[in-house]
Length: 192
Image 1 (tube, rainbow, N blue to C red):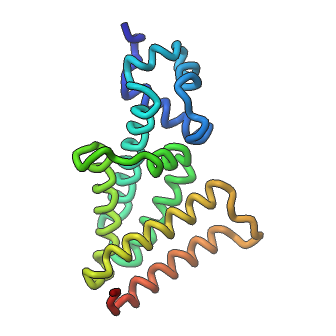
Image 2: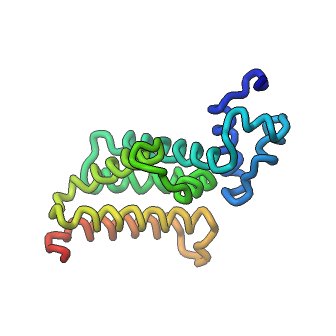
Image 3: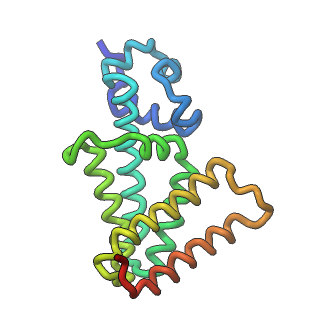
């Protein structure tokens, strides 16, 4: 019989917190069981194993980030929406580096997978930001990839301590957002 108060949602939430604390590579079932005060086999009453736990954490991360971006861009367009999105992604990765890493490592099993659905909602929020730039439809996928890559790269490098110059990281971040904004505003040409 499962321990009172312990259910799938509790196990996944604890796993996400642990991933943030020890990193996605350090997350293991034994350590999670120890943190929850149970024996490792008890976790298997709530998750099928490590892969199931990671998948559930990835879904949680995609939902959390998608909701945060969607909330941040409400009532905003263009530069304001881009800035709000960039700040939201950066803050999320700083606060939740482990679960964000898990979210990027796990792949959906198909189009109906909860992770695929959550990722699609997150991408819809990024696409909403880009709508304010009135891009040629042939450029939208390139703009989406550029936006995600730039924000992901900056946030992950920062979270991992990858910026070693003495220059203010906040100033570099503002420069990145301004560069993206300028590039999106000037994207009137076509991409072949």
